[in-house]
Length: 282
Image (spheres, rainbow, N blue to C red):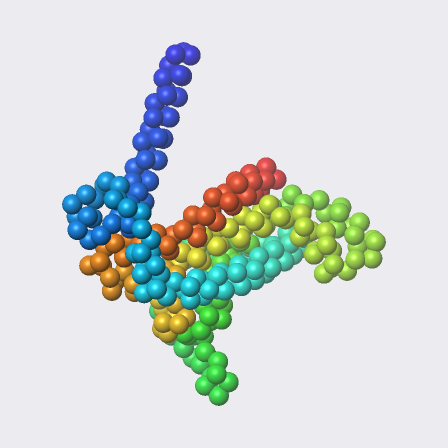
């Protein structure tokens, strides 16, 4: 029995290593070919480049206006995630503490919206938001960052409320009652007592929404028409469509686009695991 378990463990480890290498293979091909010239890519696709020159990266960043796209993505992501965290945390706290049929119905409504695919509502949504255009106030929900942020908040609240709700149920209500006895009002109780205790799940909610918002292409493609407002995925799409023949520039542009997400995920993955495990235990 022990020998069989050991053989099974070795087999699973081998499968895991092979699966990991297969998943990393496309990234390896993209990375090594980003340093090669066009001729070298076609003659030696899988081999290492003759020299690691960053000239193609500089050209790709210049042609795709990377710095502007990076600032746009950072602005949209930070504001969207910050507001999602604030709204979903407060909403979940009130839903947990109310404990009545209305709160249960609202929670089910949030959970139900998670089942609706965005593709089924994107055309009516764009038609509806087009009616919000007020030229006299220079206000428009289309081709603006605040319009895109508004939509991200709407689509991100459902999952965030669901995660917060499960975590907050494990927060002792006695702490809140003690804070109110000491003179804290509802607002102070939430921000000074409850919210600091939600740090693990807050990190999880923030990271999951960041990975989604940072990599999202569909919403920006429907909302942003001006080149100056493009986010990284949108800028990469137009860049790749224009420079598909120059594979070295295209590969360099793709590497530059995914580096911020990879770096962030490597630093933040422990918080995802910690938050999910804490929510599961509670």
